[in-house]
Amino acid sequence: MADIGKDITRAQQLLLDGHLVAIPTETVYGLAANALNEKAVLEIFKAKNRPHFDPLIVHVSGLAQAETLVESIPDIVKTLTQKFWPGPLTVLLPKKEIVPDLVTSGLNTVGLRCPDHTLTLELLKNLPFPLAAPSANPFGYVSPTTPQHVNEQLGDKVSYILDGGECRVGIESTILGFENTPTVYRLGGLTLEALEPITGLLHVQLNSSSNPHAPGQLQSHYAPRKKILLGTREQLLAHSYLKAGTIVFQNQLPGISDVKQVILSPSGNLEEAAQHLFAALRQLDKTDVEIILAELVPETGLGRAINDRLRRAAH
Ligand code: TXA
Ligand code: MG
Image (cartoon, rainbow, N blue to C red; front, side):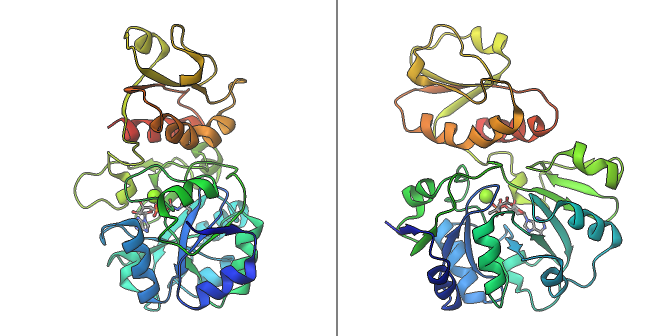
């Protein structure tokens, strides 16, 4: 098991020495290494058992550091990052040579984001390089939102987990590209409603089957081991299962014992639901239920990203 603590200096030293450190962000925990050190980045892929065709997001302390990594920053990206960084927005931009091809899986763009978490921002400001960091889970599994989640699955692969508590947003960043028209490649912690006043109507391109821009788009992803059945309350109630657990938005489904029911937000708040979603999947995955009945949430705001993760988990 890895050590868990708030020692930024220790995290900093490990990263300077080319090691992996799990870091908190407002979205999910990341598995970080020096983004400019190919050997260190290789360790990330190994630890996660992640295929090399799936590129990593590079975390920066702000726009100034971003400028050292990309050819140029379009005005719209300057406006967006001014408004939403630090925060759950990843932008895809043409990379400079200094960014190793391993980080971008050979693509000519790099995904950049400035995470909104005091510990990790301080860490980034103290380091002479940006941090490549995918979510700190084995490839294909649900992302971690607490240090304990990281420790359970990657504790023997990482020497230190920087403890930033439970993640505030709870689902990964929104990924935005600018090649033709501004396009969302992954729905995430920043909503379309927040982005569109600045970008205009966004193109949303999820699940492209061949040569995915973002393999996080893979239809089966963020998946627990248990079978998941997804639907509205009416659809879920039409089934009768003996050993079922549920993930519901506001209210329990009748006829299933309390311990197996996870309510995401009793008050019906989508932010709260997003924050609790991955922990709920992990919690039920550990029980002896045979199936997880998951209720779709309203398809608006963060609800779109929540439903997207549920669909991928169920696929
Ligand atoms: O919120 C987040 O984004 C978290 C925290 C740790 O920052 N990170 C995260 O990383 O979710 P990861 O590796 O689990 O997912 C990153 C996604 C992948 O689906 C990857 O394919 C996509 O971003 N991606 C990264 N660089 C890309 C690029 N240059 N072009 C297209 N997609 C890219
Ligand atoms: Mg991930």
